[in-house]
Length: 397
Image 1 (cartoon, rainbow, N blue to C red):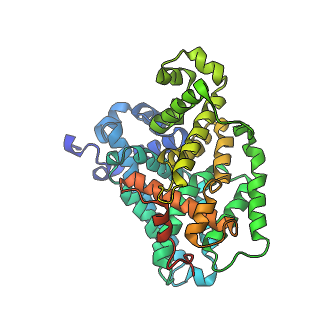
Image 2 (cartoon, rainbow, N blue to C red):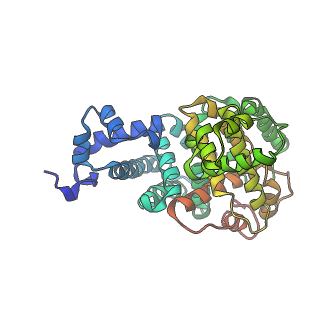
Image 3 (cartoon, rainbow, N blue to C red):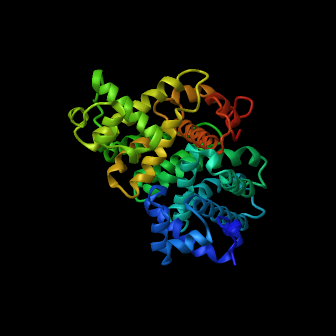
């Protein structure tokens, strides 16, 4: 019999797996905001009381889900290690294939685990102390790349770089799996990330053409000609950005913005008639905050609120198609605001290799998200880039 001291520690009750897997299914479909003991009980075909007895409260259930994901990642790591045993993926030229297949598997056979992992990272990024085991899950993900690159002399430096890139790319690979231009852009980014030597003739034009092609499905996110808000509209946009930063995009409504700003709901509706208008105002305000920070030579990787927002929009869009254009827009302009600064830190001419620059920006965002999640101190953008290079050269040189 499970005693009260055992509740909340699922590893002590082996037959709790079906409850953990039901919780994972709910999170994959509705996010953690939609996960409660009741929704999990309905998914598992059991009672709330049974879950409370076997595992504990909602916090204990989240901890059990995290533990389940750690175990599953360890098993997946062993499976992938067998695939490349004794092979140097860098020398064999197969590393881009491995990276893209890993991300594709996250959109396919590992979809539930991939979404749950993204949601766990996002949840822990707001409250690192609430999920102290999250570091173990992230470490398993990085260890996978250390295993795959164990035969490569660049493995020690490449593994954290690729793991950080995958943290940032995975939610987009899940959401945009059927978007051909996105997939081509991702392949171009991965090749840029792992390229050893100068950019191939025409590769840069190809990469930017893909960025431009994704402007069409992203167009519904905003009006490209929109001017920064002024006056009362600017004040409200700041409150929207604060709400997104503190509570996530799910908290946005005319009422919540009005409450945060201390104005009438009708005033919010006057400036932002539709929910899309509210979201756009907050997104653009957060982007402007990021630009003002990152352009300083000692800036952080980016505004932590923006880092969360991009992942949250991608994950929210899985259930709400209205967010899809925003997610596409965020992915396509991953390096738009900072590529000149990152090129300088990489020691390459600005605009000479936008795929490479975009890859390093994404790996830096992933590294920043990891630090937010585990409670590690923030590094400046140049410091993170220096972790990806050696003696002023690119990671593979």
